[in-house]
Amino acid sequence: MAAISKETLRTDAQYALELDAQDVLSGFRERFHIPKDASGKPEAYFCGNSLGLMPKAARALIEAELDRWARLGVEGHVDGETGWKDYHELLTEAGAQLVGAKNSEVVFMNTLTVNLNLLMSSFFRPTPERNCILAEGHSFPSDRYAMLGQLGIHGYDEKHLIEVFPKAGAHTPKTEQFLEIIEKDGDKIALLLLGGVNYYTGQVFEMHTLAAAARKKGIVVGLDLAHAVGNVPLHLHDWDIDFAVWCSYKYLNGGPGAVAGAFVHERIGAQFKGPRLAGWWGHDKASRFKMPPDFIPISGAEGWQQSNPPILSMVPLRASLPLFAEAGLERLQEKSSRLTTYLRELILSLERPELSILTPAEPQGCQVSVFVENRGKELFDHLSRAGIVADWREPNVIRMAPVPLYNSFADVYRIYEAIRSFWNTNQR
Ligand SMILES: *Cc1c(COP(=O)(O)O)cnc(C)c1O
Image (cartoon, rainbow, N blue to C red):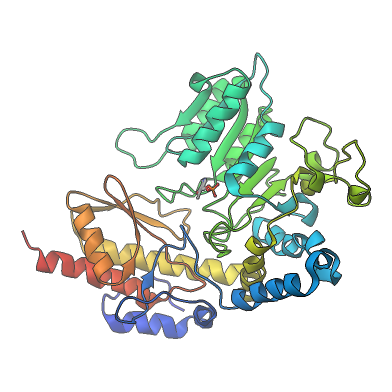
């Protein structure tokens, strides 16, 4: 397979078909429901970074759980290997593989922001000397609210949130900017909280480098992997990350409101004696149903569980998570890189001065964020009319994420054709 680059790029439709014919993962598209437009034509769906598509296998699995409830009532909790009592464990191994963790370091529970708050309540422990949080500028609003909330609980305010913004003229902050702050002010920082991939720009942070520098200064490292999990390679255990959280409805295709994930490094989670918000589902499984008055946490990430989990919001993950191992993480990564490079190069080949790509080319995930000078919303509406589902962010950014499990090169080519026709039909 020839690499796709500025030099090898062809802008004819036939090239997209050739790339699809070479794609060893093309069959996985059939395993998903692809939404159709009003005329019945499949949409070119580029919103997998917002809500992943439905794996066809999910429906039968949900129906099976409804049937089990209908047939067994409360007995469904203890119905064999897949009884509801331990149902979350059916997801652990596949989740651990996706984030590069041991099974004991991973648990599926709650939803993303809840998990972020839960783990910060254990791992953001400011002292009079060390009481700041270091984060990327323009982090997802929910994360910023959660950080400010946690600061507030400890009696600190916004002045204790250090945010790293791009320098003048740049679209994204540089690794060196974080490293400088860690070097200079590291002793004041209690927590580094980083989105693995920024939701707006699609920037993939150099998580390993930043985590290593922070940990050397005694800073706790947390990651929000909402846009990273199922998208870019992750090695949380080997990178020595302290804790991480993610949602399951974006690249993991777990469905709206799907149960989220959390990671706590074994080094901390195995023996944790510090403070935590406790609930009975985090209690030692052997004695949980004896209902003892004192809390004995399960060792590892499961010790942070609160409640018995929403089974129906977990079920689709049993259809979607195995697809990653089946396709192979390396092959997915390779296709992702080809799709995204193809999209970038097609956009650049248009040579429209109005368009600039915010997303750094290296390292690269699925997402490409395009800044549109003037008429951005008009262009976005034009794409929508052409059956392209992208995502509009005020004031002038279009986000598109070609997903290797279900997007084709022909899908990507539709973006190119639509952008080109926008300026052909709107010459001014
Ligand atoms: C999508 C996303 C969220 C959404 O939070 P929920 O708790 O799932 O509603 C939060 N943070 C980041 C970084 C996200 O990308």
